[in-house]
Each structure stands twice: as C-alpha cells, then as structure tokens.
Length: 58
Image (cartoon, rainbow, N blue to C red):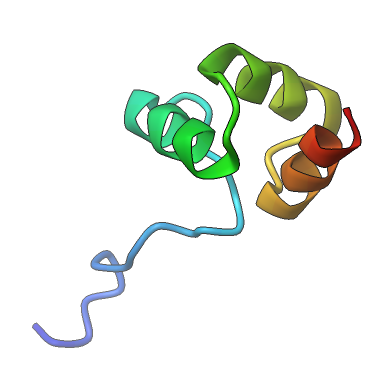
C-alpha cells in the first residue's frame, strides 16, 4: 500500500534519547559524548535545535 502512514522516516528535529542508536548518532553528529547529550536533553528537552544551542553555550 503506497499511502501507508506507518512508513515514515525519523523526525530529525527531535532526539529520541531512549533509542541507543539515536544517542550514538546524535552524539557523533553534535561532537559530544553520549553522557553530555543525555545531560543536554535533560536540561532543555529533546528538540535537536535546543540541544545544539545548549551544547554550544557550554
């Protein structure tokens, strides 16, 4: 079925911290450790833009 709404890609504007592969990928992409990424998400939420700004300001 070509219009299957369940077959969508990941939302790259949000960080799914419960998914280990996303933590690994985002940490590499943002140039931080996985622990720093988890701390940033805890501080500002899972918005990739907010996490990016938080990490830059540290």
